[in-house]
Length: 342
Image 1: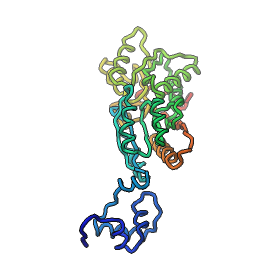
Image 2: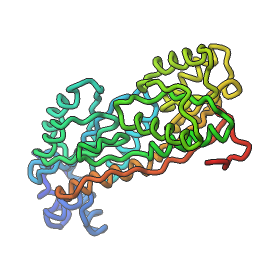
Image 3: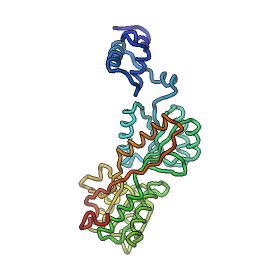
Image 4: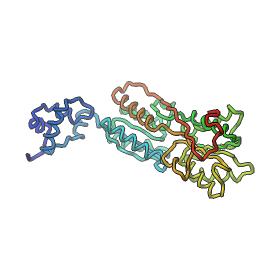
């Protein structure tokens, strides 16, 4: 069957023998509609070549069903996986994802807000991006909820979903102490980020439980080159560490490469532990002992929190920390008893 001119929902309704509102429900994500009705409507739409106009619906309903996902640090293997999982989870809820790349330079998020507002996004997820008071205010004024993924900012009043970073740092301290290490150094994540600060704090607290202090503690800035150079300098010092907790896997891989280039063995000469458990951590070349970020639970909590705030703008923000398990592999010397002190 062919028709001239633009095919409308009314044309589909007439052919399917249903109301126009039934057609609208079939093409509205999450709307309730009988299976038989949906089948008739989709068959009629296919026959007529009808395509629902998402932009027109957005103008009518005031909802774009677009989520702005703002991401930095794509060189870190954690974030491509997170983007994929977040996108799939949002699409399953009937939302489309618009990806914005950010850096952590001052004013970057403020500039991106112009685009986010222009696209009339229903909500925003930021991944490891700092949020200023100005951005918080503009989101509030526009009625757009924002959830921070893998970063927290308690003073912002925004929802934040992270792993239990400080607890993860304490688990690593206990593991290394139980493994007989006493000169435990830390190449931390960027100390301007909550993740970097909390993991470092956890390590310090865990070492204090054993009567120890960090052998050395230097900010690796979540940067591979910085972390590698810091590790080289540590190992060239008069009393090198016998273990290094590196603030994320991305940096830990660079540290392992740098130490091997110096002729050092991991873990025989120095144990290395990371944080994230990205897919590469399990590769035989690294076999990295690390803390596993509970990715799917973090993604599910982020999506549920954001959609709940879209549906109910008066809903209070929530901060959630999800437990992260320690994954024992071959880059760190193990205690004789794997459960010792852990």
